[in-house]
Length: 284
Image 1: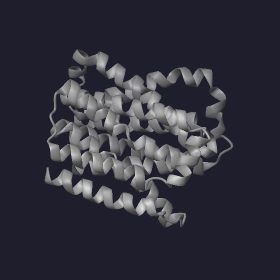
Image 2 (image 1 turned 135 degrees about the horizontal axis):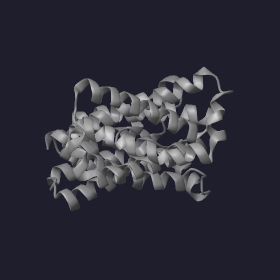
Image 3 (image 1 turned 120 degrees about the vertical axis):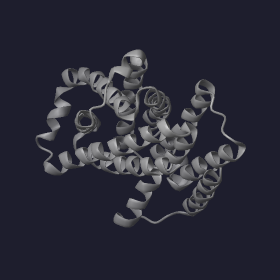
């Protein structure tokens, strides 16, 4: 469970930095720069650790599939954060764990205990409550918020991508698995470099802050993915998935501390649900 929680910290910081960068330079430039930095970092780890990528050859189709789903998911998620509102995007994104757990049960044949399932459900439900103002959520869905379709696509995509990454990591190890995933993901982004070159040029007039934010998003993301990959290699995939779903709490906490945003009643209830759910997961 601890690996899932650490991954959640990384992904929560990713959302916070990516949303800030995306509104300065756009989602395409943010995701490409951030993921390029992630690939550079994991390549350095691969070389230093002298990890072999040979095990990936037997499951290359899974690596490519993971790259496709991951690339689509990051682009749609960053696009949703760019368009907002976060009150709609965050709780939908947190539900990715439900998709991942279902795939784990169906294909890996993990059989979570009843306590694990209850804990996962309570945790994910609590995250969805704490990451939004229900009034804003209802208004956003009723008004067909621009970020809503993108958030739904990213939710399903991240669930599938997380399941595939866990499968690859179990077969090839977490370092090789991450490297293969990032390599396939960058290949998927190459068409955007040629089809939307103006998007990347937005960094020229954005200043150093936008570049720093995009790179910070990439670094925080690779932290989350690394810990997630290692955790799923060593333990229960469904348990790590459920614990990692608390990542929106980080964005809420940062907004509360730095933006002085007040919590609404349903968010306090959500915090109680998350704490209860994590205790149940820990007991299981």
